[in-house]
Structure formats: structure tokens, C-alpha cells
Length: 118
Image 1 (cartoon, helix red, strand yellow):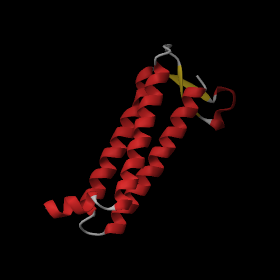
Image 2 (tube, helix red, strand yellow):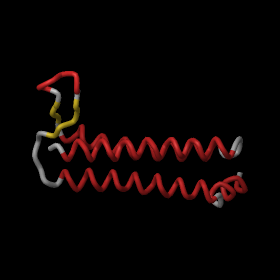
Image 3 (tube, rainbow, N blue to C red):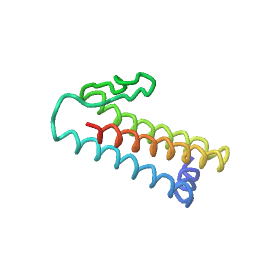
């Protein structure tokens, strides 16, 4: 088991993707928490384009903080799944990390868009 762990952390693609995922997770956490310092209670948490004039739905701070929990969970789960599947197939492990990267990137874009509308 020790040899597989060191082999996993010595793989260049895995390290690159883990670093990119960690950066996006940190970016999400920092950007959401710094924008919450401004205070206020009404945050736009949803946009429903089919509702017309009432397309924007407001919510509280806990719904915005859920973006932080989402980023941390995505990073943790994808890193764990990638580590476990590395023994089986190297390409599968890299694909899991790439999908996590895309999910984290989408989370950064959506949280930034919603917090800009505030």
C-alpha cells in the first residue's frame, strides 16, 4: 500500500490536477468569504430565466456558504476517488480529477456571478 501511495503522489498529471483543484477550492472559499464581510442579509441565490420579472430569488448567508461546503466536498471526494482508483487504472484516476476540476470551475463561476448580482 505504501508503494502505491508514493507512486500516486509522484505522478505529474495527478499532482498537476490536484494542485489545480486545490487552487480552485481555495479560490472559491476565499472569494465567497471575503464578499460576505460586506454584510447584508439579502443575497441572490437563484436565477430562474423562465419566471420573467421574478427571475431572481433571494436567500440568506447559509445558502451562499453552501458554495464553500460544495467546493470542499468536491475536492475531498474527487481526490479520494482518484487515489483509490489509481491502483486499478491510471487514466481513470486522471479522468476523475479532470471532472472534479470542471465541477470546481463551474462552482467558481456560478458563485462569482451570484455574488456580483448582490
